[in-house]
Each structure stands twice: as C-alpha cells, then as structure tokens.
Image (cartoon, rainbow, N blue to C red; front, side, top):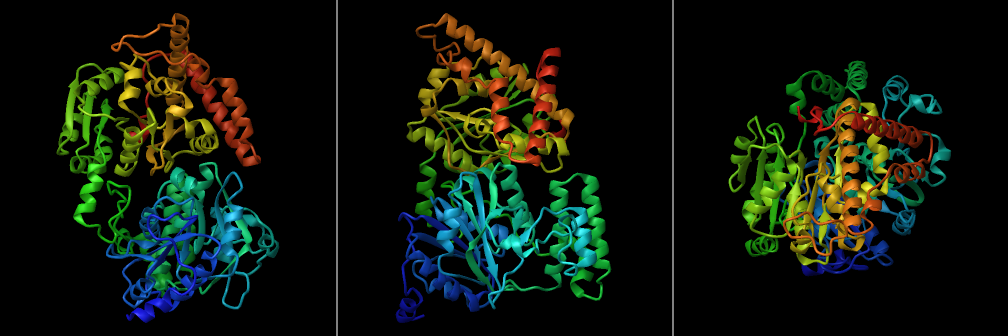
Length: 639
C-alpha cells in the first residue's frame, strides 16, 4: 500500500501510541471484515477528538484483506499470527496488549459509532458500581435492535423455542430477549446484552478475570456479564450511546448455528445445577429436532448428542496470556524484549502442600515453566503427605520439593522460607491457580515498593457448585473487605522488609489473616493483575467446614493479637512471630462489622436472599467451630 493511501486511512484525530496516556482502550476482533473495518475506525477517530484512546485490532486469521486494511492505519496496533482463537480469545489477546487504561471498549468490526457514543458510555461508567456498560444497537436503517437479554433459564428457553418472535409482549419468564420498547428508552441495570459493543471498567476486568475462551463464539458475553454481577458490579444499558450494527459481519453457517445451541448448554453446565443443565439440554435438543429442515439445526442435534460431533465444532487453542511482562506475544516481540522482561522479575514462590496430588499439577502447570525461564524460585513443601503430591511436583523441572513428616502449614511455610534464596516471596496455596502474570505483578510491586505486602486479585470459580454456595459467593463478592485485604485469596507476598516484620510464621490456622494484620493500609495492596483462580466448595456442607476453620482461625488471631498488644514487646526477636500493630485486634473483621457491611450490600430481593444465605452459612460455620478443632478443608473441589 502506498504512503498516500496510508495517510488517507489515518485522516482525522490520531489514536494514542504505545506508552502515551490514554483514557480508553479499544479492542476490535476481526475475521474476514475487510468491508467493515475502515468505517468502524473512521467513526472511532471522530470520537477520539474528545477522548484519547488506544486501539488494538486482533485478527483471527482472516483470509481477505482485513489485515491489510488494519495495517493501513499506522496508529492502530494489529495483532496477527495467533490463529482463530474465537471472540473471547481475541478479546483476551487484545486486552492484554492495551497496557494501562481505565476502561476497555470491545467492538465487533461490523459497527459504526454514532457521534457522542463513547462519551455517553464513559459517563455511565462513572456510577460507583457500574462495571459494564452496553450501548443502544441500531440496525442499518436506524431501527432499535432488541439487544438486551435476561438471565437464561429453562422456561425462557422453552418460551423462545415454542413462540419465537410471536407474542413479543409475553411475560419475562417466557423469553430471554427483552422486546418491550420502553426498556430501550431509559438507562438501567440489565442482566446482559449482545456482545457486539461492551465497555468494561478496568477494575472490573481485573476482579472478574479473562473472558472464558471455552465459548469461542456465542454465550461468552452471557458468561462474562454473569461473572461481573456475581463479583458485585452492575451491567448497565445506556441508550444515549448509539451504535449501528450491520449484523452478520462474522457470518453464519451450520457449524455456527450448532455452536450457538451447544454453548447454551455449556453455559448451563457451568453456572447451574445438574438438573437444570439437563433440562436445558433437553429443551435445546428438542428445539433443534423440531427444525431439522435447517442444516444448522441438524448439525446442532448431532453436536448436542454426539461428543465427537461436538468436539468437531469451531474451537480455539487457549491464548495463554502468560508473558513474563503480563502481555502476550501475538505480534512477536524480539528476543531482546523477552530477555528484558524476564530480567525484571525475581523472587521465590513457596507452595505449602498437604495431600494435594489431585490439584498440585494444575497449580504448577503454567507457573513452573515460566519460573524456570525467568529465574524465579518455586519451592513446594509437602507436609505430612500420604499421597503422591511430592512425585507430581517433581515432574516439573526447576521446582524444588521438600518433604516434612509433620502435617503443619506454618511449619511448611517456615521450611520454605529457610530453603528460599530470594526476595520478594509469594506464598501460594496448592489448590489456587495463579497465572505467571499475576505472580510477576505481585513480585514487582514488592520489589519496587513502597509496598511491604501484596497479593493479586482473586476470582472464585463456582462452576458446579450448589445454589447456596453460589449465593454465598455472590454476597461475599459485594463486600469490600475480601477484595481489599490480604486474607481469603489463598495467596499473598512479602518484601524483605515485610518479612522482617513477620519473623517466623505463628502456629495459627489463619496465617493470611495474621499477616494482613501486620501491615497498615498504606503498606499493603492488591496489585493490578489477572486474578488467581480459587475453586469454591461444591456443596453447602463442604463450605460450612471451610467456614468453621475460618472462624476458628479468626478467633485465634484475635486472641493472639490481643495478648501481644497487652504484652507490648518493644522489639520481638527475629526468630519469633511479630505482633501486629496496636489496632490489629480490631482490624480483624468481627461479626458486628461483617453484618453491618452485609446489610449495606442489599439492593433488592436477590441480594437480600444472597445476604441471608451468607449469614446462615457463616453462622453454621461458627457453631461448628465451637464444637470441634483441627484443620477442616474442602474435599469436594479436589475431586
């Protein structure tokens, strides 16, 4: 392409280059979108006159001139070479490449933004709990597209299957699509909406984690918006932001029709109990059986009922998102850049493990190769193990494995400290999955200061969990304390100065709670990083066991902190656990503070029910804690 053509392609306000400040990051995922891309970027340039934005185009293996069109825009970063990773995977690739931006706008390539759309979206995002904002979608003629949706259910699937577009004003429990015209006339929270245009607050993205790439295409926005709501954020519809949608820019064929139906079932299996997921499968299969005249629905029936046909549907390889610098090598950084990124990370990861053969491989699979490449130490301390935990850990080159006869987490942490050679240090539970980007961000924050203690965000995986467990974690996600404190995530880190304040780990159940109490708010932080994955107990009974251990640990820490404060040693010896600051006993969350915070999260019937379930389960845990002792852990998530 000539230089003159390049100048024409970039006519208008310029986008921010890498390293320049930007108020907004934009990710455009493309696949054979040559006819659409220039129109979208031209409309974005008009919006860039008032909003400094950085734009990334992620091409999923187009066979037309899409990449050529994208590269004609010199100020647009174009990522290629990763294959077709699907819409969710493309979003993850693009978001990882944007750098530090306050919000991310995800766009289909077959859109045109009307003037003022971006400022309207950003204005709505200023609401304190607004995590996602969806615009008004219009078709080519300017008519409103019914893009808002209700949470999927069996009755809604059945209603849509039987009635289709007929009886458009039917009750909400009989339709997933919101067709009432008044719903598109005012700004309000919604369950979810079409993912053609989605604005996400950066803080929300960090707390929720990457888009689920298992969906490839369809239902990925349903899943993401649900996770946003479960994390305590709101999904808003903003009609003042208007976007024209060509629709069908990604194409539609029998395989994609089948994928649409399969992903409905995949979503139900991820988020609903087994009987509901089974009913969803039955309704979806019957719906496609009734439409076997259509090749797409014939493909759907086979995919729903035959595993081999389901595996043959479009799917992408995992994108990984595991560069040492927190980004992704989609467009191939040179070896010098990769080497510099590795050199910027140093430290040790200590993993205490007691009979964790079922999960330790999952924990080390992504972490160990990265650590070996960067020089970060990984020390696994098997304490009192009677299974094959040590054998599994030794399969990962570079991982040091220690074995202790005593089953004690504090002793395991101390042994890991004695074996470790480098600071800062991250202490990671063996059943928590942390990406290299999350560990690297924590180590850097501790190395560069001024933080003495830090951890990455945490996302709770409730897939397959019972309804009470899901309600509990929805309520917990609305509380500020679990998002801001060091405890409760299964991971935290200490700098050399922070560790000096700790000394040795005390013989307490809640080591993370004790460590959190050692530091004032200005000395600790939750870093900006991909969240670690914490698997929730699958049953309420298992959750109560965990809550009993938590209650026992909280009581121990409060008692130890109070005793230390009364003793008030001037300078505890380095070999002894340090005492938390004078206010530590009150810093440990008590029942009254927790209850008050829980009440403040109630905004309606559903949040009230979630809060009631949370309170009941916590109370049951405290009652169990008074009746027993010892280490009670969840076995349901380790199967």
